[in-house]
Image (cartoon, rainbow, N blue to C red; front, side):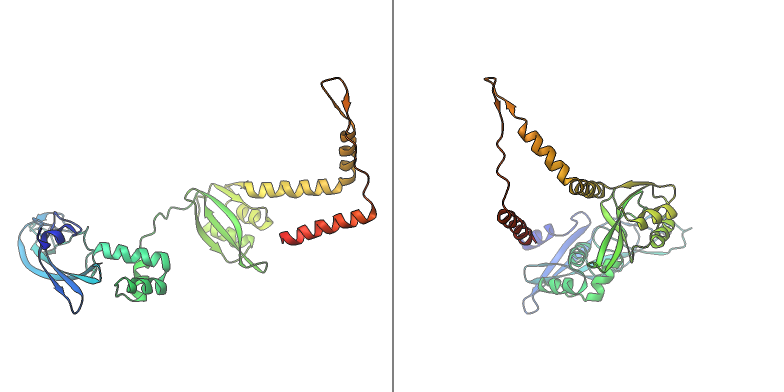
Amino acid sequence: MEATTVFSRFLPETTSLQLNAWHLDDTATRLTLHVTSTQQGVPCPVCAVFTPRVHSRYTRTLADLPWGVARVRWQLRVRRCVCANVQCPRRIVTERLPNVVAPWARRTRRLAAWLLAIGLALGGAAGVRLSRCLGGTLSRQTLLRMIRRLPLADDRPPQVFGVDDFALRTRQTSGTVLIDLERRQPVALLRDREAETLAQWLRAHPGVEVIRRDRARASADGAHQGAPEATQVADRFHLLQNLVDALESVFHTHRTALDAVNDRLRRQGVPLTDGTMAVAVPPPPPTGQEKTAQRRARRVECHQQV
Ligand SMILES: [Zn+2]
């Protein structure tokens, strides 16, 4: 199979693009692809009338995904057309290939998507370091600009969201994290745990219907001031934490009484199938030395856990 036919298969679109020639520059390790658009005409971006009349042609130089160690460059021939609608204020329409390259861009869409994926995973400096290892030549500023230009995935205000704290510095500075529970992603980090800060955010983002919050007083007050109509719900984690705290306190306070009940139950005996009763014999009460040893064992266990 001829190399041009093989290379053609790797173009992002085979219906609107045609590969005419290619050139591999061994010293620069660069593959140049001479590509022409084969679209029949161009729709005018102002009046949408299809315009087949060619005014002139020009070449766009685009970077594309590298192949092996070679950087890949396109020389893409596109057209300028004359708008067929005489009423239209736009006279000259430049040809666009929206699935291949953005207007004015100097990289193909697939290369831009590749770089963006690196930038989103690693950020500016590390993203540039990795992309250079893979043959990219862009700067940190360019990569960050590409990330900033991305449209927000979905910017409708959250309706069901959770409020919790997070540590900026453990046990010293805490902030508030707001999580969209429907989309399962954080939506805002607030600098402190004050009720007013949370209330301000809620007032600026109306439409919240349910707030699932922690047990902090500030969360309750902030939610009440900022979104009085919203239903406040205690989250499962904090409910269970409440229960654990309450039960621990109860068991600790009534420890002697609970021990006595346990002891009585143990002595009651269990009826056996032959009609006799089996009674557990309690172990002899521990001596002072044994009690000390038990306490020490508990402390060692606790220490090891820590
Ligand atoms: Zn037009």
